[in-house]
Image (cartoon, rainbow, N blue to C red; front, side, top):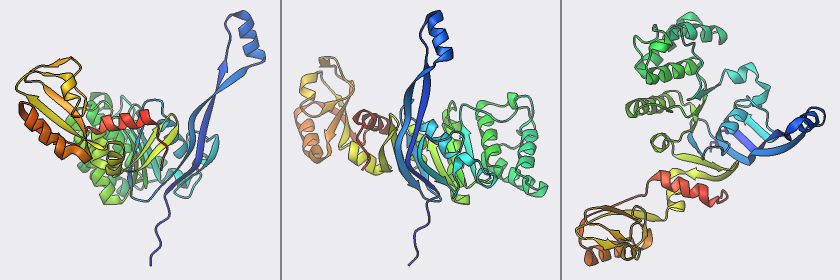
Length: 339
């Protein structure tokens, strides 16, 4: 029987603490700060452990300030952990060995590496020289990625003349020119319109299937996560609070379904609250024709829907899973430890 593959990323009890200097106001405070500086310590990541297998596409979720970007920077070697250990493709990231750097890439939606006034192709040639990519191979990779990203005719234009979506695609092309095994993506669709986001997701899906690349993706757009990731890591206040499947996350933290109602007549809010948790109405009286959202326990869903239809003047009723953004929000608030 074949043994399972070795994890391509392993983090064990990973920690990062930032020292922040404390300065009192005034001249005396300034002198003390200069000669005898004191610090307070802010934990950004606390005892985080996980493994990622080759070829996995994993979502990395958390509110602003949760420690996502700090974790990515430790995984890519940009910053040194304060404690714990991490291995990525068999290397210790902070040593920044050349062989390690050839196998990873980091794309940050709010940062750019291509020069603003130059055509992207000029910057791509610099990248090719850095990674020692032969000319024939360079041309083949650029052609293939250009077709995948629909960038034909754009790489010879100055970056400043491209749209935001085209610039993000060009940045992604530059990051993938050396065909890395692992893609660390920090908000890669940030600021893009709906069509550009969809195109970027399709490209990442195709790239993963074609090359078997491993992807660790952070995003505030839940559509990115649901479209690409079967597994998610959820982090809050620097701690990992969930590691598992996306569907299991919904089942574990959302043991209810969302029932959307449209009523023919006005109805007291208090009456609606007897059927489930009202999400969309706050006024004491819900007016006729308004849509009402109820969260109803899955185990009593059938009986509750039957009661709603029998006891209220229902014009329309639909049952769906609750929006994943709201489920994730509840996970953050709960702070439930990883199982």
